[in-house]
Length: 169
Image (cartoon, rainbow, N blue to C red; front, side):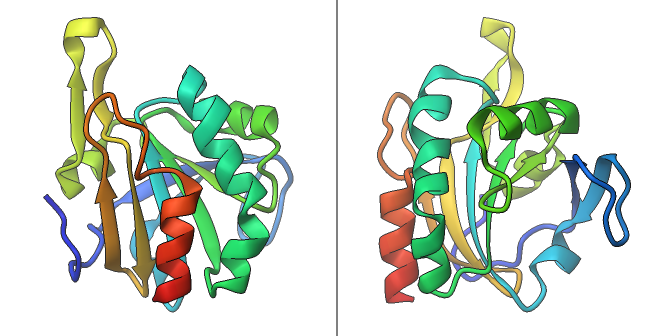
């Protein structure tokens, strides 16, 4: 499992873009983790799946609401990573009104989750391999803090925990 001081694994996440921009087209666009984190401080939180009740009601809204506080604490970007495709993450972003506050990144085949060692096997429930619920503060691609949630708990992936850590870092 990834730990504090480790570099994030080389992998590519996918992000759905609503509008064409510099270097990106409308639709799914690759986000190489190493390039996207270079020289930045990222508040990253991961969830098992998009549109799940707790994640939609608590986790994502908490980060959206506290986006300005994260910026004030020196965080350049907030990332939500989930084992879903970019289209689902784009739809979830619209539903949660994350535009400009939280980047919704898909890890469709769980490559990132597997590389970090933070997987949750829900095949017995028909959901396949998912991501654990966790949060981390990443500076220039290196893990500064890591909070992995125990199953059934909803304590460390919330915005308050990571924001307090960002303010101290």
